[in-house]
Image 1 (spheres, one colour):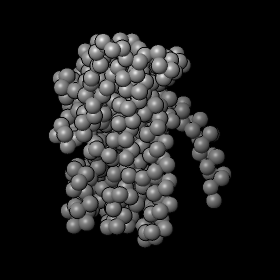
Image 2 (cartoon, helix red, strand yellow):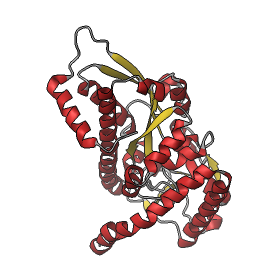
Image 3 (cartoon, helix red, strand yellow):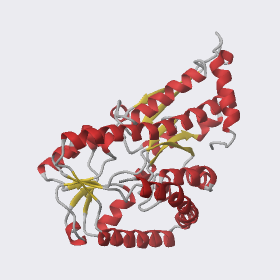
Image 4 (cartoon, helix red, strand yellow):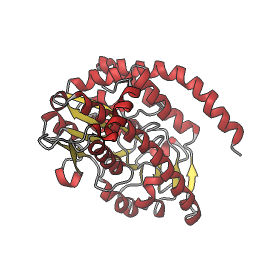
Length: 357
């Protein structure tokens, strides 16, 4: 568990950088392997992981190295939890909503439709009970879970046609993962989860009518804007957090200073990914808006949003009735969001409302 004594950890890190932990000639190097869901070089996801591994090696003075294997190496992009649990890899990096079929209680630690913003979710996780709930969920799998980066609020997706009513969703073929996929399926959408490499071709050929990816920073290189002109604002992933996983047996064998170094490197990676993705999206949108003026930014009509919210609330209630742990997590998030949202309104919403022309 990431401890709240980050200042002490930072001090320890500074001592490491000063050379106090340089490897002795007869000291054995600890070598770990990390499996990630992403292809090598995917910004900012893969960059976040390789930066993390580089920082651990540097801060440990070479006492610890972490080899990063991408999805093309281990061939199990969505199987990270199982591989870390089994000890095939000491660490993993993925998104917990990919495992909702295995354990639905992992899902809320990535994001939930109409849920908390990134600032709200981070505050809930570190100071509102979320971290303890994550431990309760992931202990059953024999792994430690840590926040591993955030995309912030994701866009609602690229659509080949405009959505003007709930009826326009019926029969629509769309790539969308997580709980949001279940919500849209209830509204008549044919939901699929194609691999990333097939998405552009599927959208171009009409095999699918719409898809959500992330936001301008990651969408621009996928080219979706060239074949689907309607770009909808988000509702389904307001605070998408990725996860680092660590096999508990491997963790317990590490000395305390290396545990602290790993924790500091993970916190650094989480924060930097969010900042990096924000910067990427700002830059990409400024380019897309100029180069492709045909892109039409849309919000879903109020009646569509209302229907999505109603279905989402019903599915959460039904799942909570079946699963006490899910109910516990949802109640914790709802209680914290009720308080946090008032401050979000005062600090961010009203500022933006008064200062955006």
